[in-house]
Length: 102
Image (spheres, rainbow, N blue to C red):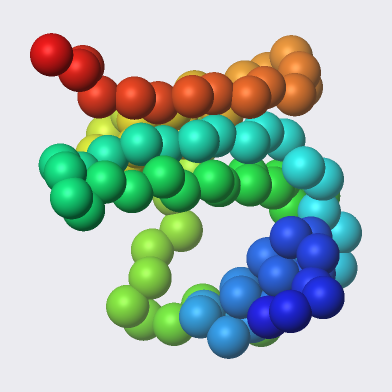
């Protein structure tokens, strides 16, 4: 959406995609993910936010809530998301993910 901050976008997207309301978020990390092969190479820029208070609403049955302590039991892509979510220091990080180029 034009003229929408990433913070406003994540609040809107959570509501649209899973029907939950979020009020307070904090930007935790940004990662740039490069993937694909020529001519369809892609660069995505992802903003990762932490939700500071509980969600309100009802989580749809097609979704599952995962505790951070269980996160390693799931195949999360890109894998850097696990590192971001499990970062206990609270440091802001910027990751660049590039495939091995030959």
